[in-house]
Amino acid sequence: MSTVKTAVLVSGGGTNLQALIDAKAAGKLPHVEFVSVIASRPDAYALTRAEKAGIPTYVAQRKGTTQEAFEAEILAELQKKQVQLIILAGFMSILSEDFVKRYPRRILNVHPALLPAFGGKGYYGLHVHEAALARGVKVTGATVHYVNEIADGGEIILQKAVNVEPGDTPEILQRRVMEQAEWIILPQAAELAAQTILRV
Ligand code: GAR
Image 1 (cartoon, rainbow, N blue to C red):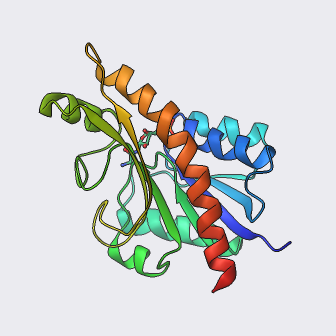
Image 2 (cartoon, helix red, strand yellow):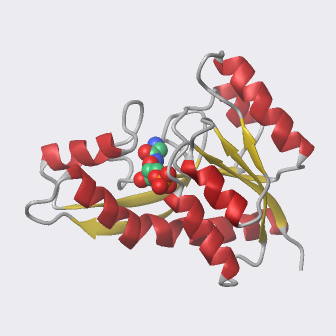
């Protein structure tokens, strides 16, 4: 069976990366082949998860460099590994238009809200859940979308709703959105995107 060479870009704990690794081990990603995990910080725990799963890792540090140099480093690793699909899984840097245009419908992102709500610049990680609670929404969720030049603005692939419960803190809500939505729809969308690439 042919597979799509896939890189996962991470910045932190990597629970979404773990969901991808577990889905692969469970046979749910037959067309996805993980060839690289690229972290924007050397201390990202996601790197340990990748090493345990036997996936090659690479660090392209964002801190102390320019956006251009940072992206050039990522690009070199992607080209070296002949990557066809890129998954942003808790990747906390916004990629430039130049970068994104090189990979049309080849970059996926998981966002912890029902876009277009609570998306765009400044809406990342826990801030998204803080904003949802401050607005008083009763339902939130997660979105997996293709990445284009508009932050959180690309075509939506999958979404899943999650209830907000009385007494939720941003941390509690973040965990529920991960468990009930992100960790489920990210692997599903990855397999769908890989199948689409193989068809084209
Ligand atoms: C996840 O909730 C992900 O959706 C979010 O950061 C968290 C990373 O957790 N991503 C964004 O906010 C991107 N704009 P993880 O490192 O455990 O996967």
